[in-house]
Length: 433
Image 1 (tube, rainbow, N blue to C red):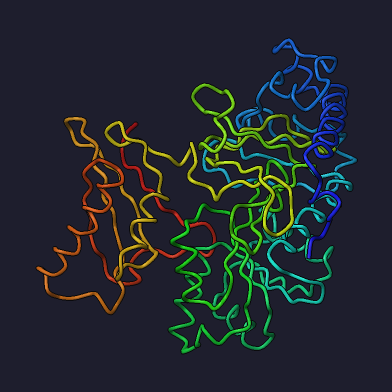
Image 2 (cartoon, rainbow, N blue to C red; image 1 turned 135 degrees about the vertical axis):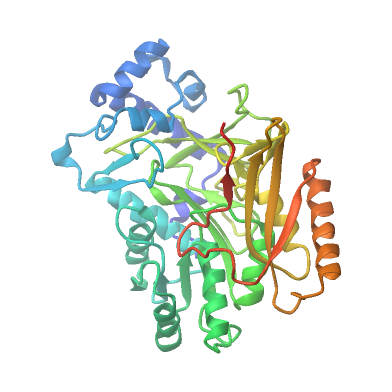
């Protein structure tokens, strides 16, 4: 099922025409209604008259997260606060959080794009969905909720946490769809095992996982523990929340609603368009939002882009799974390291669990060290030091072949790394940078 076949299956010419029309309208709208963009356009020497088609988008300035923080709380809105119907706030760890305002029309739009994502995942009206994303200021729970209502699903609004209760609901209500973070789904599998639940005999048929980068190896791990299709949903609060893009059952990239969110992929070093098919930073322009449209917003997510028609019938462009983030990337001895690179290695080695932490330290002489804490499967954990040492060396060698730097691997007991009911904390950087 395709929720909005007219828009999701447009030919390139038709899509480009709609994008051009909507970009021109959006640029004019923010120029008239947003003091923030009036100033930004003026400092860049751009006016609405410069924008005549979607190809002119490169003339517009970028917007970054610090712009939102610097204009906290409502300085980036394009509507009066009395016309804003919902406010969400990101969970920033430093400085001001980012605030996002939604008009009534934006809430309707959010419902539409999430409904598209649910259909991409194989949901059909009448299905029951267990939403285990957090409700509240975080956009995950309400985003899936709105889209599920739009599609006609029966919603169990569990929110995050209370894992044993989640599993009881699974057993008693028998929902077809689970929506949560991928790391939480693995934590639930671990808890289910402790409770004596056979994870292969459950009702979940579809898992819609997002809010954190996750690898193909983690997909295989989830699908091996739960008998379901594990599918990726992508979004970010600044743009709208979940609903920007979603995998279909072909699992060959995430379809982005590019009639609503215009995507670019740029080289983050040069700020120029990345070569087609090459990794780069995803930049998104909202071309239909009213409450808080954003122009060329730098997501910091590293992706590749595919413009070919998908086997599912959709013609909307597809982004790859998130390959990493420019802001969760860390540098060790001059080498760019993404947690997802290490995750791929760990989950390809039999005996390791999908729970790990990366600890970065700096010696007095200035040399950086990377330590990888890895949980072993109970079947493989041994008291024999020689055997454990050999396993550590094997894992370190595999990681070093990918990163081209030496790492220290430390095997830890099963369940010793802290679990998260939301986004998993992978990196602990102890350097005084």
